[in-house]
Structure formats: C-alpha cells, structure tokens
Amino acid sequence: MDIGNAASSRADFYDRNADVNILRFATNLVPHGLTIRDIYTVPVGRKAIVGSMASFCIRQGMAGTTGSVLMYYKYTPNGGAPVIVKYDLFVSSVVNDRLFTVITPTFAMYPGDVLTISTADGSVGGNITYDLTSVITEFDY
Image (tube, rainbow, N blue to C red; front, side, top):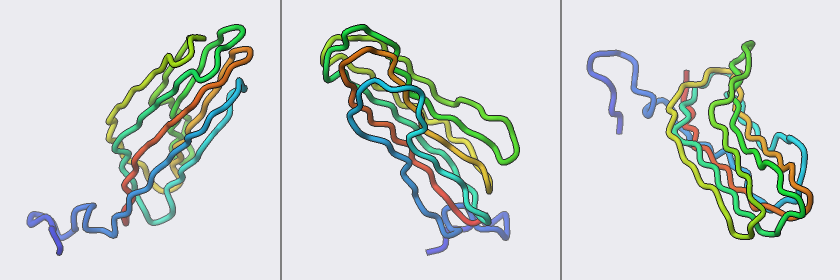
C-alpha cells in the first residue's frame, strides 16, 4: 500500500524502499582501552534516520581498582568532523551495579555518513556486560 503525501509528488520516506537496521554490540568484556565496537555507514543512494540509541552495562565481576567505563555513539558526516551524540560514563566496582539510558535523537544521515559505537573500561580486573543498540531506518534518497 502506498501512503504518499498528497501535497508532494515524492513519496514519504517509509514508502521509499524502507529497511530497518540494528546497530548493536552486546558481550561481556574485561577492562580494555577505547575500542570501536560496531560501525554503520549509509550506502550510496540511501538516507537514514536514527530513531533511538540505548546503552546498558552491568558490573559482573568486582574490579580490583575501579576505573571509568565509557560507552558512546559517534556520528561522522561524510567529509565532516565527528560529533559524539550519546555519551555514558559508569563508575562502580560493586557487582550487579548497572547503568541504562535511552535517547531518541531522530536525526537524518546521508550517503557516506557513519555512526559508530565505542567502549572503554579503565578498571583493573573485573568484567562488564555491555549492550548498546541503535535503530536506524534506511530508505531511498
């Protein structure tokens, strides 16, 4: 079914070969330096709308020395400077302490634009379970 816009000859984005992509990183890790975990790049001839970004972490093993746990999403426009659009900082060595945040930024991405998920854990010992997820709707330009 075509649900076009009567005021325009161009169909709405959801009628232009829409496809939902999930950018996700979920695993349990020991302390580590800043590392890119997942990357989404808008393909040629397509646009995308970022609908939501969620970050979750839980301390599974007690750290000997507590450090900062960092989770962030970085947007880099094609040929432009990168911008951190969501940043979460968690500091705890108590087992089962957790952090959960969700935002719905709803911004458009164009061909060649990139969204990355990164994590870091400055603790000494212990481990953290991460789950970072973003929902991206991609459609014809």
